[in-house]
Image (cartoon, rainbow, N blue to C red; front, side, top):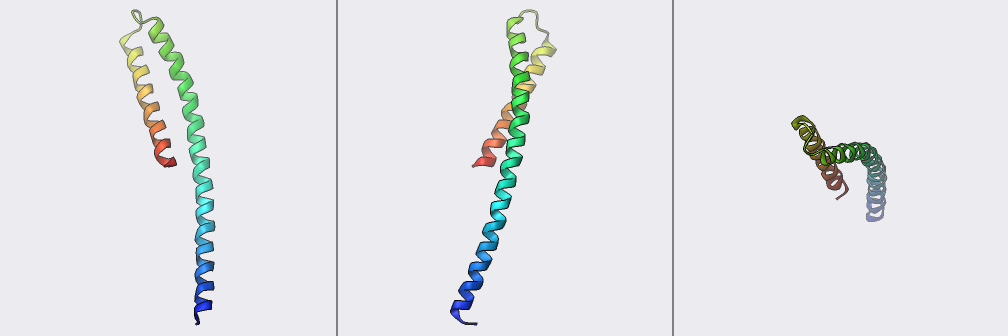
Length: 87
């Protein structure tokens, strides 16, 4: 096999890897978007719960405050995961 044939073969292999990577990147973006959409719904629930807890701070039960805190921590972790996936 001469150098031109080797370069053509290398070029074909690179193109194959590139095409596969492009598909994987597209799928990853879709996965991240789905994850984002889910987190946005959780964000809305968190904001509602937080508003309730802050508005009724003296009346809010310890359990309600703990649930709001847990949801907030879960959201923080979820958004951090998305940031890491996009790096």
